[in-house]
Amino acid sequence: AQTVTQSQPEMSVQEAETVTLSCTYDTSESNYYLFWYKQPPSRQMILVIRQEAYKQQNATENRFSVNFQKAAKSFSLKISDSQLGDTAMYFCAFMKQYSGGGADGLTFGKGTHLIIQP
Amino acid sequence: DVKVTQSSRYLVKRTGEKVFLECVQDMDHENMFWYRQDPGLGLRLIYFSYDVKMKEKGDIPEGYSVSREKKERFSLILESASTNQTSMYLCASRGDRGTVSNQPQHFGDGTRLSIL
Image (tube, rainbow over all chains, first blue to last red; front, side):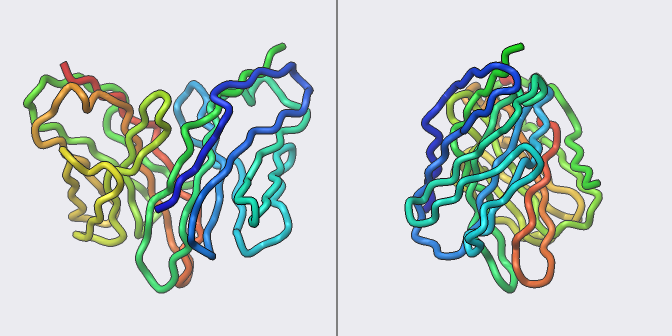
């Protein structure tokens, strides 16, 4: 079984600052995917970024980037030039890789509530 | 864009009632999932399905069952609702490209269920 740990229940930063959310995970799988999801007050879960474990290059999506350290089982999210609209719950999630059929759900961390102050 | 629709945004039921939560997706996705979300606990997987009439238990299946009679629809059933099932319930779907499951899950807006 996998576990995902987010050690920061809440963080608060000023608008335009850079913030890093931490995530560590534990697994015996070799092939897997990692995700960051954002859940604003509207409750819609929005995919922010994903990382394939076999890729050494860190994923980036505009102002969002990850620092993926496979050996350390760490997957932190960096938000640059933070904006008021980034205020949300952020969840780190793990998924095993399946081939040839079958499926599995996501294993989520408990979330980090990020508040961007004006 | 993928659309995952949950039939109710808010629902209030009484203890002992049989409760149905419905979820429909419009992208012909093979895989569908039910999670519950509780403060301080994150999201936990209840059940999932990778094909019509197929179902698999997740991490917390007790007190729940599911039904998938059509590919686009996945129902969560609370056989006899109890107050500890008061929670936010999120449905998700995911497609598979080729033979490798590397697609993200797409979520509905959630149903906030209160059991009185």
